[in-house]
Length: 494
Image (cartoon, rainbow, N blue to C red; front, side, top):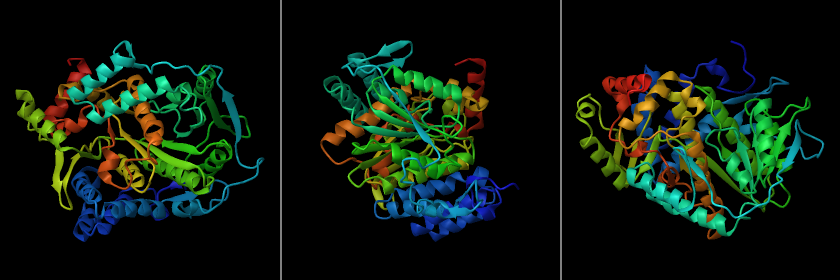
């Protein structure tokens, strides 16, 4: 096998992902005191299709208040100690856990990249934030009314209403609230990311994405129409963009060199996605950059990490959400209830945290590498003091809809109450407003943030899950029900 440059799975795995992944999950189980579960994970012969019951039990360990943070750290450490970085120039192999030991280039002329700075030409003005939804641009009371409808319908949790209302009021009264804020977007081209919102609010955005000339031209043109400042890397050949997988430390150093000297508050967001096993590698690359920035930035600067969580893994849910799921199962259509579809996987009153309930939304279609990547992000968030973490709903992003099965299922998933699939244009500003709440509104009254260390406070912090976490069915567990959804979406009979 040809050696892969940049971030890679352990050398001894020879490109195979199953055993290294098992080792990570086993490490979490062992750290949580469950050696029997660790052995069962190692003994699973069909990991691709048999992984879910095992990692459900791992999530129950991570959710325990007494041992959860330490168990999660064991998972982070296992990934960072076994994954490697193969230097593209020297081919030298370094464990990811040691990569940030190399200090940043401190010279103004050093580094792989030069910075291109685009200063917007618009003035910051007090105006209502717009959210497009079903042909309308919702603002002010209309937006809040729709948010209440989503809360009532089960697509959002009640805390989202209070946070979105607070953000609308804050930015209407203080339009300069983001003027002194700096954001680093890893995966700045994400369809669910806050790129446009931040620039429109006057923030400084250090953007990182791959070398796609047309996309960078569009982002640069947009930035000029806003009151914000866009900073992005340009290589020696004049090409904009960077590769997180192979230019990891160069990106870290570029960001450190270009954080404004006056900045005392920096938010670094992980918004990347790649298919299959590459999703794990790109998440780890972002983690190296994020922790490297935190390690080497000036001491007076507060560094916050931001994530978009997924209801397709494990997430804490309230007692009211459990009751809603039970209701939706009991009151579903005759066909759904008799399609041999089971209720969703919910851990109720887990050992070690009897008040905690967990919804496990794992999808066999997405696979074990997706689960590992997204769970890693939760584990990493649990180690931080300053975190913004918001779950996102089913969204018609290109990364999802390029899979024909996922696209057809999403077209019909609204038949499973209360799930709704959203367009990216709706999701982006809503998730950005939840981020803004953590950065600005909450930041006025306390050192950020309200979700450190605890699994529940991370995954239940701001829940715009689109109804997934109140669903009454594990629809993928029934071939009749999942097949019906696929066909209904395929032929447009929804």
